[in-house]
Amino acid sequence: MTNTLTIPAPKTGPAPFPIPTDLFIGGKWVKSNTGKRVDVFNPSNGEKICDVADCDDTDSRAAVDAADKAAAAWAATTPRQRAEILRKCYDKMIENIEWLTYLISLENGKALPDSRSEVLYAAEFFRWYAEECCHVLGELAMAPASGARIMVQYQPIGIALLITPWNYPAAMATRKIAPALAAGCTVICKPATETPLTAFAVAQILADAGVPAGVVNVLTTSKASALSKTILNDPRVRKVSFTGSTPVGVALLKEAANQVISSSMELGGNAPFIVCKDADLNAALDGAMLAKMRNSGEACTAANRFYVHKDLYQGFTDGIVKRMSEIKLGDAVDPESTLGPMVNEKAVAKIGELVDDAVAKGAKLLLGGQRLNRPGFYYPPTVLADVPDDADMIREEIFGPVVSLQSFEDEAEAIAKANDTEYGLAAYLYTQDLKRGFQISEKLEAGMIGLNRGIMSDPAAPFGGVKQSGLGREGSHHGLIEFCEAKYVSVIW
Ligand code: NAP
Image (cartoon, rainbow, N blue to C red; front, side, top):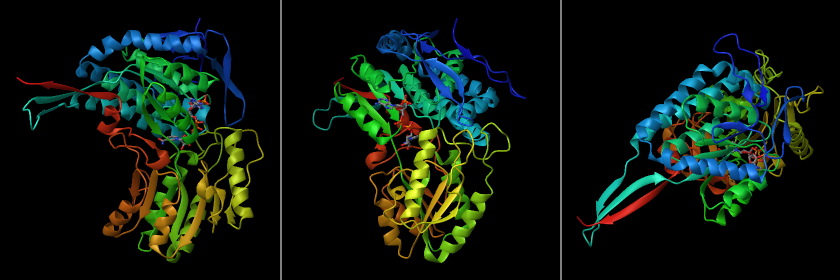
């Protein structure tokens, strides 16, 4: 009998199936080799929700065997066949949006509106890649000297290991699974220990949509590094796609180097949010709330440092304090909540340390600043003004509901500060002068710029960073090519 978790049926939409909590290998839910389990907790009250299988090396090898067995047949399907299945995956996710929303809030702690947005965003990767699947073009050219034909075809790269974080348990998985499947690859997914349940639910939905056995496999483990070591040293595996912290990304790159495995890395961020003298103040405040508070501030693209021109600084500060104080903090599955708890004790403790450090170094605490004294991992909306450059939160990801403000006089100074980080994922910029906007955008060292926008994620756009924020891009046609090899045939006809 498969272990499962039953969650309440929503008021509208289909009832959830019992969510399997074992390993998904070769189209079957199987117990781990050791029989061991890992606990999953509810961040809203700190209590255990259930436990999931804890896999070992034997299970990891079995997942590679299953992915290998399914690989040739899946690669041989036509783009249209894969597209039809991916489109069904989209339909099924949308059909089941109500309980998927609840499930994400339950295990991750984000408020229901954030979880609902995530399901929509996550499902959209299936729709986008169902369409993109049929539009992969090759190349044909004549070699200038020999006159031979240069023919290039994009072929599936092979078995891919997909490792995802807890902050977007559905979207970070589908952003990898959808392009991999579209390219014709088979995959092994490793969700974060905090949020495995959404990944299991997605796996079952994919199977129900017609994804053949072995094409998608899911492993959970308490020993992530052992799992990646085993899988990345198996000669049949040709790709690792990782989303998570930079130190773990670096460790995986080193492991992948043993077999020269193609690596896509979506890593940490430290996004600056620049408000120029000529910005529309209200638009900048709206954008700031989105860029900071979407997903409880637990986003790699979250605005981490606000640089506001001195003429707008007071107005911006007052506006942000007012908006942050209107947020309703509470249990993630309470429909009244607009902000839930942080994911775990470590996260809430880290935010507390960063805030205490900034205040000790001279920042002015205008709102919040103390974790809530109740079960669960609650940190309130917090605003700090005049945060000094030597505060740790200027260099490190806050990953929580904390706004850190600084004023500037000179644009060049703001740009220099924005770039003074080893990260380069997202940056935000508000100005009513588009020429200035483009000029500054070119100078910002970031893979993505929100120009008068507080959000830039879009399945049709290339998501990714520069410097230590990553390698490669997800989403758009770029995301699919990450799972392909260019095969060149030289021929004279
Ligand atoms: P994390 O600690 O790096 O973990 C991410 C994933 O890697 C989890 O599944 C984790 O498994 C696994 N992992 C940990 N150590 C590993 C190892 N030695 N070998 C193989 N896998 C390992 O990151 P996180 O705390 O979950 O997520 C937050 C970070 O992700 C932030 O830095 C954020 O900026 C970044 N992020 C980036 C993007 C982007 O697109 N650039 C998007 C979202 C998040 P366990 O859970 O089992 O430890």
